[in-house]
Amino acid sequence: MAQIRILVADDHHLVLAGLKALARDDPTLQVVGEAADSPSALRLAGELKPDVIVLDLSMPGMNGVRVAQSLRAQVPRCHILILSVHEDRAYLRQLLETGVSGYVLKRSAPEELVAAIRAVAAGGTYLDPAIAAMAIGLGPQSGTSRSIDRANELSARETEVLQLAAAGYTNKELSSRLRVGIKTIETHKARAMEKLGLDTRAELVRYAIVKGWLSP
Image: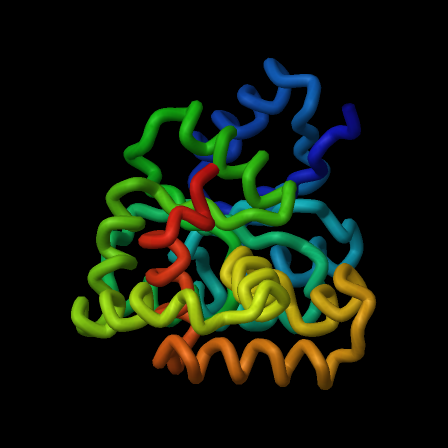
């Protein structure tokens, strides 16, 4: 099995040491770089092109959401997994809109982090159970119910596009994976979102959680 190449961006030495220890005990994981501040994280991500970037939200140098946005633009094929103490709904909404692939709380068990790394490396989305419950609460609950009721209005291709989009795939990646043009992907996604009454990625992720699309 190919190793999952991980860049760890966190200014807490204990966290870095713990992640490296997890990787040493698991032959499928490899820590290829460490960053203790935002500029280093951005530089190393560009140089190393890891499979997964484990990112702390509170590093010196730049706001964590801005770092995630910069990483998405700079290394779009890398999957970003947030590892944080924050359980703030506003943070979660912003990060989901940015396109991060996962969010794990630092108080969670090490096994939770390993499961999250594997899930996002495989192209999925992983939300810590406490955060997943919060994500479902983003926006009016009645909207989710109406969206579920409208699910049968989606074509098979629209459903496929939305599932992958919720998992964090970009339009370009969807175009390559499904072998259709980017404009076609954009059309499928826009039509599906309109049919379900969804406006943002945060709402799409909430819908995907309720539907069970994002189960690890």
